[in-house]
Structure formats: C-alpha cells, structure tokens
Length: 441
Image 1 (tube, rainbow, N blue to C red):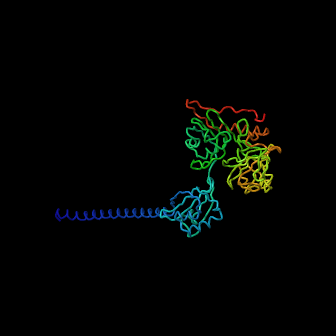
Image 2: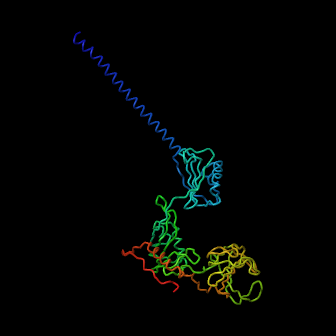
Image 3: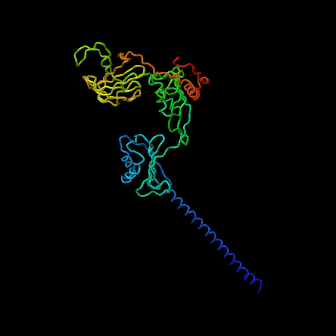
C-alpha cells in the first residue's frame, strides 16, 4: 500500500472516532441539560404548589360601626355560606355580640384568592383566629369546616420612662414623643383636679411619666399598663403624682407627700354642663305647692334621660321611689357626708351597692313633685344640708399611717423610673428629693 493510501486508511477511522466522540459528548451534555431543566421544572412546580398552599396574603381593615360582623365579612368578599360556617365554628370560643367597631381584622387569602384565615383582634392581649380545618397545619383548607380559637398574644411587661415638652398641646407632645394619644388622656385624668388641659398648658411645659408597657415580640408597644408616677410642670409649677392603693385597696394617686390627688367629690352630679334652675335656699316659692318653703338643694336643668353620676365613692343606702322626691338614690360617703339624687326617670343601682366616683347611678327624669325634667341634688353632712355651690370640696383621705412605709418604698421606686428632661441650656432637671413626713402629721 502506498503511503498515500496508508494515510487515507488511518485518517478515516480516526475521523469517524473523533466524530462519534463529539456526538457522544453532545448527547451527554444535552442529557445533563435536560435533566437539569427537568429538575428545575420539578422544583418550580413544587415551589408553586407550596406558595399556593402556604403563602397567605393578608389584607388589614377595621370593623365599621353599626354593621354586624357577618355582614362585614360578606362585604369584604366572603360568601354567605362560608360566613355562616365560620360564625358557627367560632360561637363556642367567642361571643360575636362583643365585636367592637374600630378593632382590627385581617383577611388572609392564597395567591389565587382562596380564603385561608380571618383574624379578629379582640383586645390588646387576645385574637380570634378562624381558618379552614387543617389550613394552619397542612396548608390545605377543608371544605366547609372551620377551626376557631382565641390566642393570647405573647408580650412582656416592662417599666419605661417617657418625657416630652409641650409646644402646642399635651396630646401633640405625647405623640411627638412617639407614644399613643391614650397616654395623654391618662396623664390628663391624673391631674384633672388641678389642671384643665384645654386651657392651662403653656408652651414650654413639660411632662414625665414612669409607666408599664406591654411589649410585643417585635418590640412594638401593644398597650399601656399602670402609670407608676407622673409629673406635669405648668409654667414652673410642678404637679407630681405617685400610684398607691387607697383605703379600699383600689389604685389611687397621691402627691409625694402622701396627699390624695383627687377630691372627695366631683364638681357636678351631671357628666355634662347643665344650667342651675334653682339654687339652695331656706325660703323658696314652690311651683307646685304654691307656698314658700326651704329648698335645701340645687336643681339642674337637664334633658330627660341624661346620665346622673355619684359625686364620690360610697354606698347606696336607698334606691327607690319616695313620695314627692320621686325616684331617689341616696349615697353614704366617708366622713359623715350623704348625697341625694331626686326625680330620676330610672335608677341604675340597688340598696347596699358600693359605687365609685363618677359612676352612673340613674337618669334625669321628672318623677314626684316636678314640673319638668331636672335633677334635684342635695348634700348633707352629719344630718345638716349644705350649699354645694359654696362648698370647698374636701380632699380624699391621705395615705394611712399604717401604709406609710410601703408608700415611701413605692414612691421612691416610681420617681426614680421617671426620665430626666434636658432644659434648653443643657442642664438636666433632676428629681427633687421627696418629703419624708406623713401627710397626716
């Protein structure tokens, strides 16, 4: 065989072998690529199924006023049959008559719009959760069956200090400090006997509180607990209050010296301003009896059904009809005081019931000897009627001597928790040392 023929004989087998190898490599690469694509497609399908079953997209809203909860759920797109099943499921764990307007509701749906969960925030600590049976565990909703439960929202209680400066109002100062407006209302209630927070605040006033906060797992404040101590500096005059218990064991606020922050009596037995139509008098012409006789109380002109409140803590010693007085509530208070609430259209308390200051005890009416709806209010001290308009309202009892050491310990701890306020010159306002003497001394 010539050299040329020999070269051809060697070339073609080598060429064919190389070609076969290239084809084999190409098929192998294609096989690997197809397997990879197939695996990726399988993973994508699995992920899509997981998303469809497990991913829940929540829409947040609040319960509107004067709309039944079932109607509200239908308005947000849940059909009536499903709503009926949900309500039936939750009936054993929650009374829907207690749904409150303004509370938050979360509607959870899948990416395809299928219902997955409904959460209703009952209060700061509890949430009602309604979900298709098995949906929370497996991601697969049941048909018409639902599982309902009331869960406790995990939280911790911490003591914290809050301080701020007033430029406009206490409400604005509190929100500027990063807190909820509720805190402003709580502060205003503590100092309500000394300050009118609609008229008294001045630019430059400051406030400080030591307060318990309920903190959620995400660090957000869920709600406020007790205000342990509070201070409001009004134009250089600092009002300070410390939380302690009163003679009945109820929480109450006292000055650092142990004097009660609240007066024994409110300024009016009516929750809203009402004109005085007849004053205290020993010689008044009676419009029905047509004779002059003492009127040992005050008549407040108020519409029928207006709420009447007890002006102080005490015990109901009479509640019922009594001749010309009409429907009467009589309350016995500490230190020999008794109050009378007459001509009521309705009585809301019973004999022997203990009532708290500001509690509704009846409604304005015109029972008994009355020409129109009004409240005849009277105050008696050791059997003698007093002119309430001219009475200097007495303070509630101070901290009892037997409780003084416990009060001092609570006071010192609470005041130490209040944060300092940096003045404009950079000086830090410190807590002044509390007085050690007992208020009753």
